[in-house]
Length: 257
Ligand SMILES: Nc1ncnc2c1ncn2[C@@H]1O[C@H](COP(=O)(O)OP(=O)(O)O)[C@@H](O)[C@H]1O
Ligand SMILES: CC(C)(COP(=O)(O)O)[C@@H](O)C(=O)NCCC(=O)O
Ligand SMILES: [K+]
Image 1 (cartoon, rainbow, N blue to C red):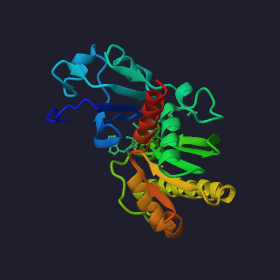
Image 2 (cartoon, rainbow, N blue to C red):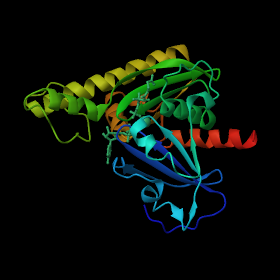
Image 3 (cartoon, protein in one colour):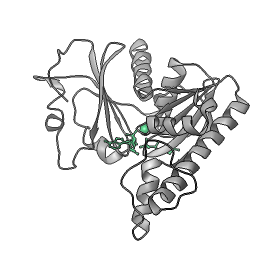
Image 4 (spheres, rainbow, N blue to C red):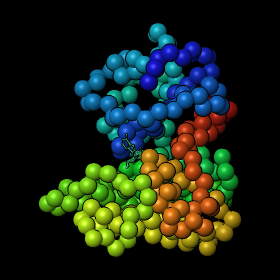
């Protein structure tokens, strides 16, 4: 990221650490100015100054709100002087369980605040997660290996069944070569699962919004639009849900001192 922006009093940063990479956002007050992704930091980075050369203005480190599901990456930020680590006990959604991922809780909070409740959040990240809420209370969800992870695990645990690229559109379902057979197997089962979870949720909560986020959101929506155009129209795509959750957190705890 470039360091060439004016740092205002109201500027603050959020860093959401997922299992694949870092998700950064720069805010001015309530407005998102800029967001970007970056690779995980190397464990050899041992102090925040080294890590944050691009996010300071001289010796004024910006307030940093950190939400992480990767403890070894969280540890690298512990000495940052203007740091707030967001923990699940600070998320006001009712009915959560102690090991719920903070990324899921914040994305859900962000979806509730930005859209409405009931809401189902689908996070197509390293893991593919479903997280639903009604009455400002967690209803529940599901976790499965995400799109890339499914390809990678097949590649790692078999002799030679690895493929490099995801097709932009749905592959033929009944394939006659190995690459397309793998693509078909993984993509159609993920899309069928998506449809099934969404339909099941909408049966219970017919007026619910369904919001898709995470690094694979665009490609999954493409597949879903081919597979079930009618269901695809019901989906809101928002890559910034977790940032809206962090914004809600900041607002709540600033307001209450
Ligand atoms: N440059 C990239 N690095 C890693 N994953 C990427 C990249 N571009 C797209 N992706 C897709 O994004 C998915 C990871 O989603 P993301 O939301 O970034 O994960 P997480 O929040 O778990 O770190 C991967 O499965 C991959 O398919
Ligand atoms: C399910 C997750 C691995 C998803 O992580 P991600 O794909 O965003 O990197 C993460 O939210 C997590 O570690 N959750 C803890 C278990 C739970 O939410 O029940
Ligand atoms: K995520």
